[in-house]
Image (cartoon, rainbow, N blue to C red):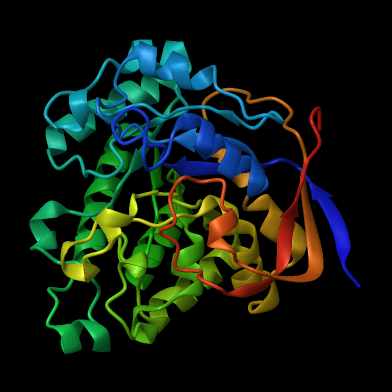
Length: 364
């Protein structure tokens, strides 16, 4: 028999809405509708729009947005001007305008001096720096982790060091500055080890795991399907296992990295398609499957990884949120045709899950 449970409002600290720049993939309105349908009370938007979200106007426009039933946005803002990695953005005014934290997500801030300045200034503001931990010097044109499919298709691979060298550099600057550091969409077992070590050391370090990195493995890929292409790429079975252990231990929170794309951008296989997949409308069922059903994670701990833990990296008191309700024990198939998102780049196809968000009425 199905049961409905209510939790503190779920928060997704990593979503991409494509407005301005690519509104055919996602507008703010469609993204909020997808978030609401997915069970989220609050989302943090990434600033890799065009133009980049490095202005007070960007922050204020996002803060004003609401879904029909009250799902809202607290936007992040750029670490560097234009997300170019050359000069630190106006962090002080962006913070005053209401930014959740600072990130150049989609790009790594490769200049050590720029990142150190950003962390010192963010520390003074009581703000977190959130980093897309993929060192471009190590990327070398890679599109997938080493796996049977990569070897079969002759695809250039993304090494583990692409992630771990970036994390090691960031942890070093974190030690120097004392700034709160959050590692976005972690994907490797070695990356998890680095984050665990930093937390044991007492550094203010958090990290997130996405539903797709928890559910899928690159070793299971059989087709040149770009709906499984993302940055960072899917890891192997060991990576997935360590990510799950870290979530279960409370070392990692959840986040979707919801990344909508129009069909044309995802129709050229791993070699030439854009990175990123949808996440908001399948996040609750996917993480429930991976962590509660398959790993035995207590359901309250699972819910905290979507609700209480994300609050730690958002500046200020975000207040009380509408509750998230989930229905457990009702088997449903993923139906991309019914997504509120404008895009359809999902790897979940016709998968069947047993836990789903339940619609929330206006006012809670």
